[in-house]
Image (spheres, helix red, strand yellow):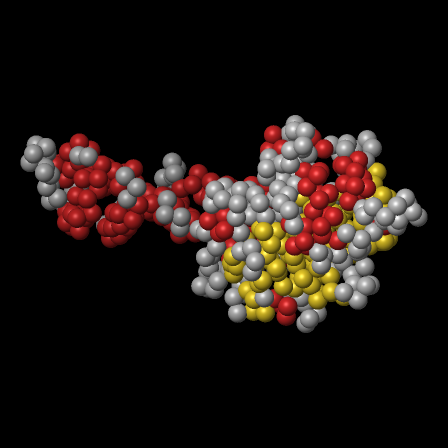
Length: 505
């Protein structure tokens, strides 16, 4: 190759090394690596070789990112000059440079200090080592120490202890949810999405945190409530749209970081229950392992008609105090291009005041189809996704329940039976009208038994601060933070985009 390029190189003749810069970068590196032993032997054998030749070769190696080779060259120069009782300070200085560029900062500082001592001994008043030592001690090490302290603080934040019992408690529903669809992405206001968060106590007494449809800003809202990654034990996703899944990747990234850095050095595993579209969307993340080779995620596919009683080898009733009945939903997923979304009934072991075990229905996003409400006939609490309202006279929505779909579904679900329906999935076009829409749906969903008939259904619009105690379906009043029966709570929606839950007596 060199003959073709008409370049003469001889590892035993330093004068021929002047041709090295004319070679292509990779060819030059390959030649130096393959001939380094002979080059060093040439440099060491001739006592008359000037210092400039050592530097020319050493600088070439540093400039070509051959730091180990440069370190070797200057190490040999140092030892040769030491034997010849020459000033070897400059060799130590450049060996320090080569070590610095390899990230070996303590060794580099040691070289600079030794170079300064040698220069002082030789009365060299222009020692480069003085500035290098000042730079290392005044810039490099303080910066590294500051970064290390910041990193330790971040790891401490990541290792925030589990606060679920203290911040929320067992047997609670928190709707950490404001707006649906993509409006949090383009709204000019302070707009948030969110999801739902349920806590249940397992038969062994552990409080478990279950995130449902974690969309835009869900984890940020969790943090505002004082919760962290340690408080999430399971995630349930009804379909793959961004407003139901946007926070998933962040949560899974946090899980991986937590397992990398948690102080107990143990793996946290999250159970994930998701639709077919969810599986396709996140399949690359769902096989995640921690640094010790332990599984971080148990994924369970949600298929309408199925009942899930286990996750992996663990019994869901024993682990969480619930089983999941998967219901149909008529809503197209992006990753399957089919109506593979799901609804859910979470059947808990939590007794209610009516001596029934509590069942929580979650419609997910769906259009109304006849008898869909019968899927939720045993639920005492129903999260009902409205999505939008009808845009055409006499036409149901094709992908969401809308107002009429909600009414029909509620009539089918618990006609004449007590039910708290939490109305969710409002687009921001509902701003200022959530209370009215909820009252319309509530009034038209009641059984027609005459004007004196007692209302058995309550439709409560959801907002970020809605909190329901599951054992008795009481709702926390916004101002006093006292829980009252849901029949005694009304909504205030004036002068703010946040709803207030008020005791009416």
